[in-house]
Image 1 (spheres, one colour):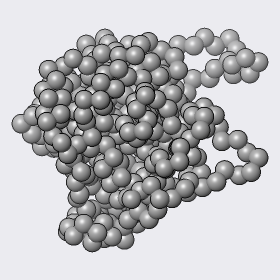
Image 2 (cartoon, helix red, strand yellow):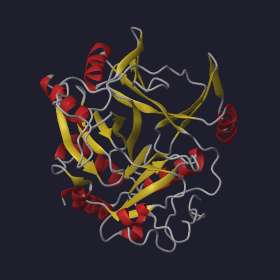
Image 3 (cartoon, rainbow, N blue to C red):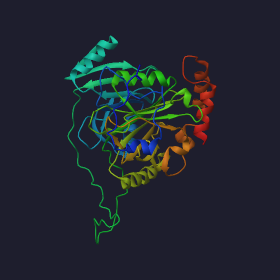
Image 4 (cartoon, rainbow, N blue to C red):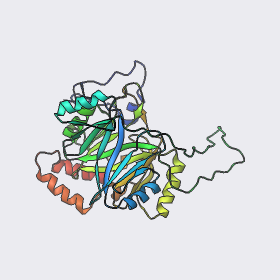
Length: 381
């Protein structure tokens, strides 16, 4: 299992800043240590996310207003990108209904694709030099791992505006006038997925893709049950990487929760929010600063109700950072900002109520009445 290895030791005499910010004791004896002893591969990041939409023109309007750039389009496919060099970060295919299909991770080398294919006894494909293998996680979410995806060149982008901070003067006789227009997405950051089988799903991503846990959240008064949310990053050794590339949480409605995209600074988040509001899109929650990951955030819904996040100033960890532990509560999702909304938390929606009834009837998952009561308490706090 993915619990039999201790994290790398912190250098003697050096305080782990992650520990002091996010937990006091770290994992207790016998608790999940947040990494696998011998994963099949270690992915290096998210390549893209894939969606389906019935109206590609409407999907394109929202995504451009949100800050993406069209990389390529056909009557049946829409490829969207950020401004930093790299692969297109969204693929939207035409279909009968709106839904999230799954994440596509980037393999470190060609051999990793073959190793995964052999481990799961599935075929690998090669199209135009891009090798890929398609898997499914324990709750059925399609997960693809690719090597050789097309690398797009950088696009021009607005530079962060100069700021006078304390005694550090960056501008004189030059007023600030950030443009009130669409933000500019730099890159894909992370995706959050819900699962009814948290422990099994968590271990699958650690054992299969080599992800490691930056932070665990547990239900207040139920720590002995284990974590119910994990923020997972790529294991890139001494090279810093995002605090989380994938986040998983126990929830009666499995599947997509939201995805997050980096912009340059707070002004792009705030001015971009005003622009989205002017276009009539639904705001979900923000602006604020998270605790786990530290990023400044703002959440919006697309016309079909799927959630997308603008963020900036996120944490970067290397493989030496230990796993943090904290109790889950809506009031502990941010350091500052407005109270988390019912819309963001997904509370009271008919689909969620129906999913809860179905999940409680399935004895094979991690959701029972005590866990449900703990989740309701956490989201109501």
